[in-house]
Image (tube, rainbow, N blue to C red; front, side, top):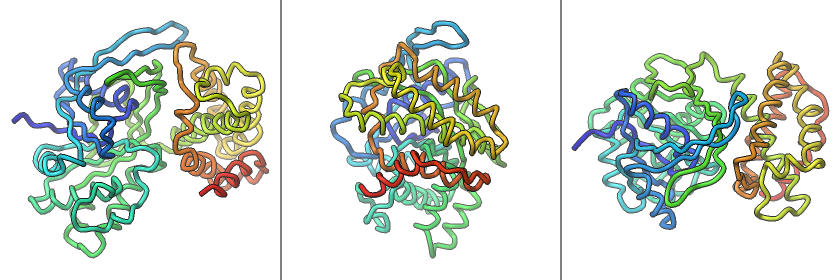
Length: 369
C-alpha cells in the first residue's frame, strides 16, 4: 500500500480550508508531500458523511478582498487519500501511525486537550483526550522500534507543541526509556494558524477568506510540511501569537459577549455586528482602552494599530456568512485562553492599567464553570 506520511487528527472545516488546502496545492505543484490520512478522533457518527466526503476531492470557496482586489474562487482540495475513525478503526489508526506516518497534524477543538478520567488507562478508550490517545500511539511506535516522528498541533493554544509534549510526558511518567524517545526522537513543533473559515459545505468543504497564515516556529530537525505562500517559518511565534490570540481571537470572543448580552438571534453574522454602531464602538473601545496598553508596554504599539485595522476589515468581509453562534461554541474555554490569558500577558509586559470590561467577562465566565 502507498505510504500515507501525514496523519491528521480532526475533520474541522478550518483544517479543510487551511493545511489540507496548502498541502493539496503543494502536491499539485510537484512537491513530495502528503497525501493525508484524516482521523476523526471525536467518534461523532453524525459526521460520517463529512469524513467520507474528504477523500478524493472537495471544494473550498475563497471569497473576500485581498490587497484591494476582489477574490472569489473555488479550489478543489485533493490531498486527503484516506479517512479513519478512532471509534471504529482504532487498530488501523495504530498501524498507520506506527508504520506510515512522518508528520502528525491536529486541530481537535477547544476541548480536545482537556484531561479526561480515562486518560491514565493502559488501553484505548474512546473517551480519552487527544493527548492520551496520542500517548498510546507514540507508545506503540516506540515499542515497534521508535522511528522518529514530528508532532504539529494546530490548536489555538500558546506554545501548543510544548503544551502537548508536557501532557504526553506527564502521561508517560515512570517510563524512562519511552520518555527518552519522546525527548530525543519526537519533534514537537509550536505553530500558529490564522484564517477565518465561515461556514461548512456539505458533505465536505468550506468557505474561507483569502487571508491565511501557518506560522511555524523554527527548531533543529524541523520538517516543513510544504512550501506555500501562507506557510512561514519564524524564529519566534511570540509577536504573531500575541496579535492573533489577543486581538483577532479576543475580538471574536468579545463580540460573542456583546451578542449574548443583547440577546441576538442565532443567525447573526460577524459582519452584521461590525455594521452595528454599538457593537463596533464597544469592540473598538475595549481594544484601544484595555488591550492596546499591553501591546504598547511590549513595544508593539505600531504593530497593534496596523493589525487592528486589518482584522476589522476581515471581520467586515461582505462575502463571509460567519455566524457568531459558531464562535460561541466552547465559549468559556475561549474566554480563558483569549481574555484571561491576555490579562496575564499584560501584567507580564509591565502593563498594570485597569481593564474593567475584560476582567468582568472573565469573572462572569468563571462563575459558570
